[in-house]
Length: 229
Length: 229
DNA sequence: TGTACATCAGTGAACGCGCGTTCACTGATGTAC
DNA sequence: TGTACATCAGTGAACGCGCGTTCACTGATGTAC
Image 1: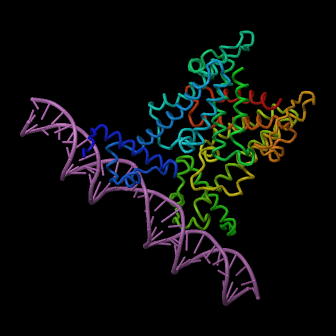
Image 2: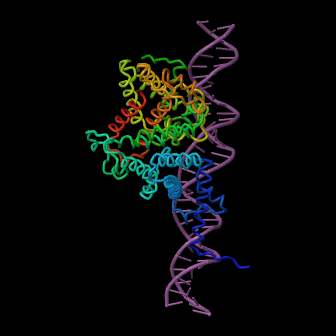
């Protein structure tokens, strides 16, 4: 009987995963404020100070949870987008949006961690920017592809100067090939997807909507007509 | 020198206002979780148990804050709507939406209390339903008035059965005179207003928007075209 | 108009609980020569 | 291949702090007759 030997680095990685696993259970059952280092330690049969070998502060642990959540969501949406043939921009839009809702429904507390009230006294480190952008980049690419496929005659023109109130260079990067006139629409579509899901999860649609999945898919269609063409 | 005599009922009302005043300061400076009965008592020079004469539990105090916030916002929006001549539905829509944003910007923590992550272990009593509906009713009435003024020829028709996934009787009441086909659009417009404001206040638009007020007013215009005509 | 009694605001002590973080330490595992 | 030293996981006690809620009580204010 040989004991499988794991290196310190391996054991360390395993322990970090264990801590995050238990923390996520607490997140799901009691919300962010219920994530407690002392309770994690208790659950793992450790003394509370032992956790400081892995996370030097509670905020650092929360950051890890946030990063994981952004990456999970981002990966789900990227996969959904990739599962539809590139030319079918409407299908890609639909798939991406449904993937967002699916993830949010399956992980309401993680969703809340990302899109609910920001944590007080918590400041997201720069680390989180890239994972947080994954979803947005997918949506922007789809909108961009849709507009690149439009006949030039169908492209609306306008002469309002938008540079004073929108960050055009940033949006141009996120929405490649999209006419400036559509930037506001893109921002609306983007924020409406999450606005709808927040309203759904936070209970503001109670009494108005019976079947949320069906309602959301109609919303997605309306938004597609609004932003893709 | 006569001491102005106040009845017990008057003194009680004054004390309740004082407690709420201090609680709101805590709400603004430290968020909901920072609202502490013991600290309120300290601020007022009272012993903590004295507060139980006025609020039998912390949740009851929070409910009072929520009610006040809903009513403040509702009143602001009702006034904005009433300040525009009734026939000008676009003007009324614009005024109402801007009033929402103005209130949210001026009271971000109260806004968060109403539209951010719901409080854990807090269940809103039925009391809050009516004040919470005030804003929605104003918006619904404007949309309804807009549709009632449309020539019948311009009213789109569709034959999709919406009753299985929307609460039609409820929506018919909130959107008097609005064709069923527009219910989804109304829900989108409604949730987008708050979705936008949440994204703004919670920092998700950072890097995309420079002048939020101007961006919001464009959003309001797009939504008006989307939902009023 | 005065007395008797009920109501109610506020006191002070206590219950029982939670938390993040620091620090000096033991003992096992890994590394360099 | 064996020894010396450094690294690191985990311990246990402590610091210093917070909270909501209950309960028996005092003393002032209001009410009914």
